[in-house]
Amino acid sequence: MAGTFKILSLDGGGIRGIIPSRILTSIEDKTKQPIAGMFDLIAGTSTGGILAAGLAGSEGGNKPIRTAAELLSLYVDRGSEIFSRSLWKRITSIGGLRGARYSAGPLETILRDTLGEAELKDVLTNLLIPSYDIEGRGDYRGGGPYFFKSSKAKADPDDNYLLRDAARATSAAPTYFEPAHIGNRSGAKWTALIDGGVFANNPAACAYAEARKLGAEPGEIVLVSLGTGGRQRAIEYREAKDWALSNGPSLCSR
Image (cartoon, rainbow, N blue to C red; front, top):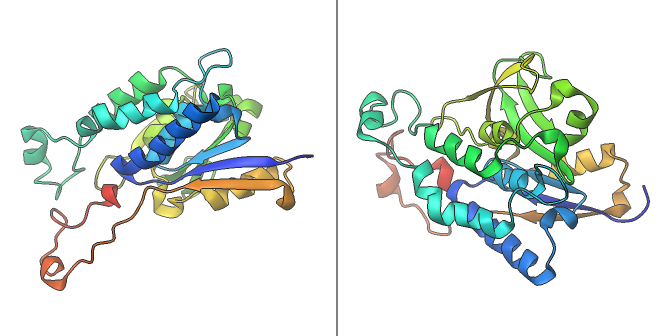
């Protein structure tokens, strides 16, 4: 492969996906180009996977499903829907001690509204979304890392999925949302998946490996990795000594 191979890698981080989405919005505003047209591969885990799917996905033609600005609006306008809990959910989950803390319904509705019927095989640039197979029905017997890859979806119909299902799987944070049980487009393969952040919250290394598989040489690869920030405030012992599942630090805010 001749020339530069450009990778965009988007970390997980829950609602703090607003940070990379702001950066990407600024890039699109300044260049007047869609992100998918600037990179040869986009990789994203968890909230980064949702962004990656929206930026790379297409429902026909050369136009991405969503601009970076539209994805930013998703966090600003609808982020509170994802992490809301009804009284019934609080009661039935015993505050998160029994079952997932949040219902996956609002998240699935937002993903359907955002990504529609777009499929993995139809993306505008190469796409990689990590998840984790907990049942062993996927590519790895006994479970393990599971990658939604556009390169595989284009080559084999059995590896083609709706982008909204891939996004649901990569963002199924344990204890926060129930696992995603999704099927490929033919319905022949069903897999139980959880958040890709359990092994690759920063998917940069996975994206690099995929770029090499696609033919890029090490000296040709340029990688842009966007995180979601981090907490700087120290946590004192008196705050932490009584932590329990229901009042510990939020995985979705890290």
